[in-house]
Image (cartoon, rainbow, N blue to C red):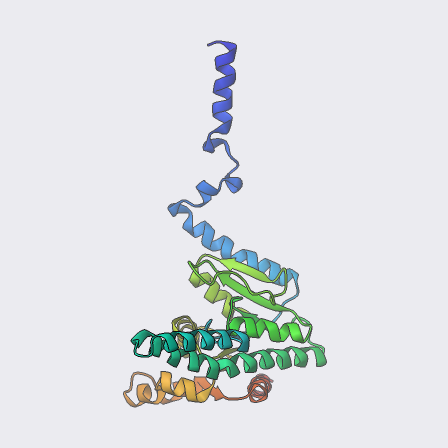
Length: 286
């Protein structure tokens, strides 16, 4: 083999994927049979960084991406009015008007979530609780943005747990830099929501919010997670979405399981419930 051929062969050897360092070979790490390793890494990275940042406990805020601030609701209303003016008998335009009216009505949940996150963060600051009661959201738009924004208003840190999706995957700008994490696996992300959680508050939302709510309820029902209050904010909304009493009446859950859920309708009421819950829990441990 000539010297030129040897050089060509050496180049081929060194450029082949097999020669890459394993931890730098993204094609290798993305193989299906390495999923267990990716799951472990996705669990460890946020855990290690949160510990380094001194995050001891969190208040988890869930809710819909379509619970939007006033400016966005106004824009949707203007679009709906234009559409129905141009096509007054169009069924889709009529439907969009109904939804626009609900967007406008639900703006209050965005504002109240923002206020809740603000007063929680201020409570932690006033009571000298560094790293405690840190607001944690999914890091996206809607209620998640409101939660991070409230902590930002209080000049306190907040966490965002983003997930790779075909939509809504960009983090909101109010998450604290260095405390925003991106996940590929829903299961690991949900685990991180509950790790360090001192309370879980569900504002109005859709399938994703329901998924997170029932995961937490199942873990509490089976005593597989720490004792925390699970709070449904907006009693009128939630009592129409889910008839928990019907589940108990049918015998598919026990009456005592209804005690796992609390309903609140104001930010201050929600904070007071969390503080009282943990004061009573601490008293029982003494």
